[in-house]
Image 1 (tube, rainbow, N blue to C red):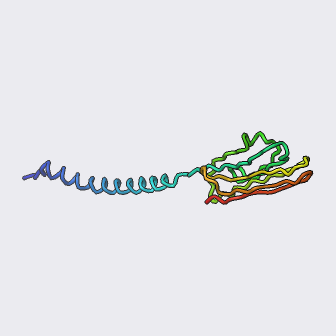
Image 2 (cartoon, rainbow, N blue to C red):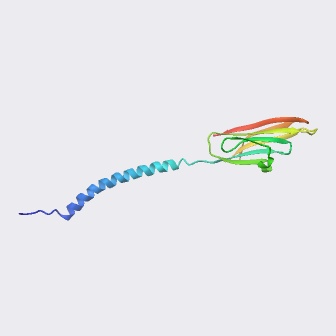
Image 3 (cartoon, rainbow, N blue to C red):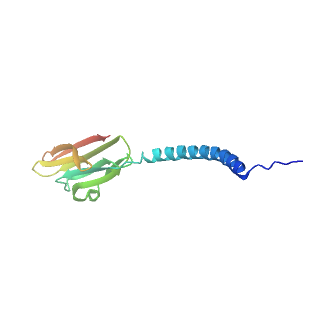
Length: 147
């Protein structure tokens, strides 16, 4: 009786061929997953700075209404929220409807003048002058949609 013993080379080659097919399939699957993962990461959230501004802000502005970063309308009589007449927000929603409104009561005998503005990433996008007559009221707003 004669037994034939396959050579070590043939056994290793056969084993490697089987394993390399499995390894190739695993590598292709892994590359697909990594590719999808990287694709999702490239769509990172982009923040935009929106700044509301009021020039000549004084005690005669009774109410300020503005859209916050979540898209909610905030009504305040606290002018301190607008330090130096400005309020900055970081927004990620698109589109974002930036809006600011002021209500003014002018008890003086002179017309009061204000300028409201919306800046996006430091660039003016909407500017409006508002005038309140002597011994009168005024309400006005400015808005801009950030795309």
